[in-house]
Length: 352
Image: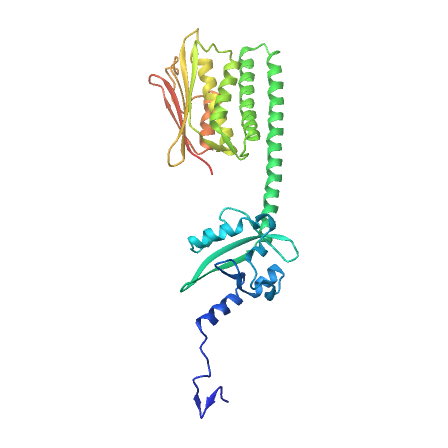
């Protein structure tokens, strides 16, 4: 059996070598995308089989025609200017980066596309090879995902709204109960519980109002919390001032609720116990975040300070126990300084 043999020898023409042009045309023809070779004046000089499939034209209907026939009517007027602009600075790149591009089928329907442009130069002849991908399916999937996300965001926003409303009802019930409680300690315990419930409600209110329903702007929350506590304890702001220096820190709900309760406990404790008998002073609330995403929450006051026998970690007060438990819950550390000003510092790494 012989293949192009003469006297047992392979002839020179048995496997003819394709020219560079033939190899180029073969690559273009069997490319998985629509490939169109365009002349400098915008005329289609070569199209492949995929172009016929995507656009619905026969090959002879496209060759020699301006590329603008595949451009939707509303974009057609400005297309020659864009083509000339590319020809002045030709380089391989995507067309219309950052913009939605559409093409026009023979039946008049439009579809979204991605287009890659490559300049081809042969001496004085300059051409552009356009690779066109129909991304209709991908766009459809993206729209489905976006719609699903919007529905979930709406549902989650409604959940935060309802949780906030339920917590406000609990707060109102506790607040009403305080009016009928005669025992001073019991009344104060109820007031503290009211404040804790309200701080949680404010977190959910912040999430409901936020553009990003997964994150809480902790600075805004703290400002709202301070205003609420000043009103609750009827603080004379000319006597006790609360200063804030709050960096922009966004927390997930898993960290926002514990941090909100910590801030509530620390500010409440300073307002209730730091300035007895008409004493004057200042409470400072601050947050900061370093480059390693470690957040520092600091609450200090220059009031009467902690009891002389106070030892960190040994207090039987519910407020301090809560602070210690909540700091541990967010993976943070608690440092207490009682020399001069009383300062509570909580450091924790921000969640993602």
